[in-house]
Picture 1: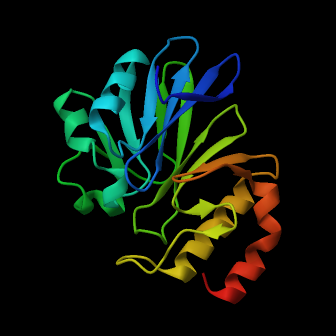
Picture 2: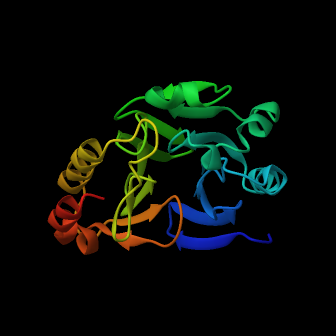
Length: 204
């Protein structure tokens, strides 16, 4: 399918990406190899394209990393298509509608796959990262990027809080963990971990 990139594959899961919208948002589709069912991370933009992908890859639900406009632009279209949308409890007021809220350590099921939610406030109050259990993969939204944390100057953002969230992620995940942010390319926890003190000193 056009614009769909296969990022990672194993016996249990396939990870695909679409880049959409004016801010080049990453949209990820996590597919269970056993059931062929999928979860989509961030119904960001270009609803028609994303719904075509959702049909192709049997998307059963949408999980949302946070409630900023560029990450939720296709939420209403997904809900209209009877695909439920989940969002972090702290960001639910940022969406015009949703189906379920997510709290820290929630376990989201997709066929035989399990996706763990990690509440990581700082970019927004309800920012949430998602790890795919039994793989080295983590999806960080706008909480962690190669080279630093996400922007904390927007309403609801807080730099001290996002640093605490990064410390939480660093404590939980090993250096080999591959993370994919809400925009741009991947990195590993091991690559970024040594730079935390630099980010704290520079203040962004």
